Every structure is written in structure tokens, then in C-alpha cells.
Length: 302
Ligand code: PSU
Ligand code: MN
Image (tube, rainbow, N blue to C red; front, side, top):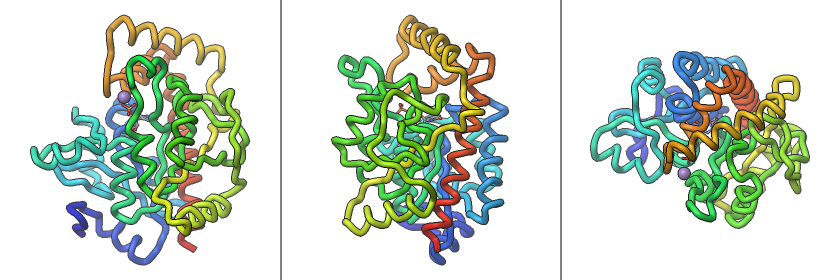
């Protein structure tokens, strides 16, 4: 199915038109956020988790220039195994004009999901305001895009490599509602808590769905951010986390990493410097987000 130049997988299109449960998944986490070969295994596992919940998965990417909602197996393999660019919303027309493939960030995935009519989206962590942003101006387009992409986005907060406080302030300025999922504290990706408490929480998928319906009824185009902490038993040890992050910042600084390379560089460095521990936690928080997103999608479908 073609809609505004977006190719929608027939199974996804059918589910959308029936009002059945669909969850969008991003592809930058596969191409740039997770190392090979775990990335392809994870991409498949996220889709299988949703299928086991009776939810249709819609992994989103750009294939040969065309934004594609719901990938075939060979397209999923392309995202995981080829070196393709990381694509935010502003890159979509460029990839289209050049006929190139790209992996969509949270911003581009939310933008395309909303256009396709997919209401729920699961990711690992949102992009946000980077530390030192008052000098570098490095703030992810994830934030500004979510202000006009009407989807429920389930994430484990934002990566602790970011300035979490500044990110929460920007979410407020942009009028993007944030609710904790069974928590009063904003999670910090690999860690279940940060030093920031939240104003609001929901205690299950039904309550999240209710807030999203109210947001839409109000005529808002904003996303609803559902902040879902990694289970405590699966979280990273805080002291080890802090030590590895210090090293990662020093390395990024020493190597002069800038722009869109910053997030992938830090994530990859952290996986190596933690001997794979950060990867395990990243996978478990992402799985957890996928299953909560599946529950919310089912709630919205009913
Ligand atoms: N969260 C993860 N892994 C990732 C990212 C987020 O667990 O790879 C990616 C997302 O695609 C997010 C992007 O949109 O990092 C943010 O990049 P930037 O800071 O350059 O906007
Ligand atoms: Mn950036």
C-alpha cells in the first residue's frame, strides 16, 4: 500500500485499517545502536515478541529511497548487515531523491508511524539534549519531532550519556506529556532510576491508552512519552555504569566526535568498555519496552 509515498507492508496495512494492534519499531537501534550479529537477532526477537502478544510488528526504515513501514526479512537483514546511513526526518527527502536506504531514528520512525496511522512505537531510549549542549547546541531532533508526531512512544527514558534534566525541561517546553510506567521516577536507560522524579505515572496499559485518547481528544499532535524502567534485576550496576561513562566521554572528547556520530560512538564505546554488559542491559530494556508497547497497542485496539 502507498500512502503519501510511504510503502506499508500488506499485513500492517490490513491491521491498521481493521483497528487491530500494531507497534512500530525503529531501525537505527538495529543499524547503529547494537553491534552485529546481535542486532539482527534482536530485530527478529522484537518482532516475535509482538507476534506472541497478537500484535503486528512494523519495523520502519527507508529502503531504496522509499520509507517502508513493516519490513520483509531481506529488508531487515539489509538494515542489520549493510552500512547504511542513520536517517532523521530531514534526511528522508535526500534518501528519496538519491534512491538510498537508511535506518530511521526515533524522530523519523515516529514521524513515519504517525503518517501511516500506527499509534504505538517502542524503542530503547529517546535522543535528547547532550551534555555540554549549551556550547555545542547538540539536541536530538527526536525531541522537536515528537511534539508533532501523535504516537505513544515507549522508552526507558533517555540514555544517561545525555543531560537528563535539560532533556526533561525541553520535553516540558515542547508540551510533550511524559508519564512513568509503574514508576514516579524518570528512568536512565541502563539504570531504572535517575535523580529526576516525574509529575505523573500510569499503572498499566489501560491507563496509558486513556491518556493518549485524552491527548488526541484535546486536538494535540504531540506524542505521549511512556517512560518504562528496565527491571531492577536486569539493570546495570550503577558504579560500573558511572565509571564506563566517564571513559566514554573522555574518548569522544579526545577523538573530537561530533554531530550524528556522537550517539553511535558513545553506545559502541560503552559496549566495548563494559565487556558487553551494557549490551545485555540494552537488549533487556528494549524487550521490556516492546512488550509494554504491545500491551498498550492492544488496549488502544479494544
Ligand atoms: N536508543 C538506543 N539506541 C540507539 C538510539 C537510541 O537504545 O541507537 C538512537 C535512536 O535512533 C535515536 C538516536 O533516535 O539514537 C538519537 O540520535 P541523535 O542523538 O543523533 O539524535
Ligand atoms: Mn545530535
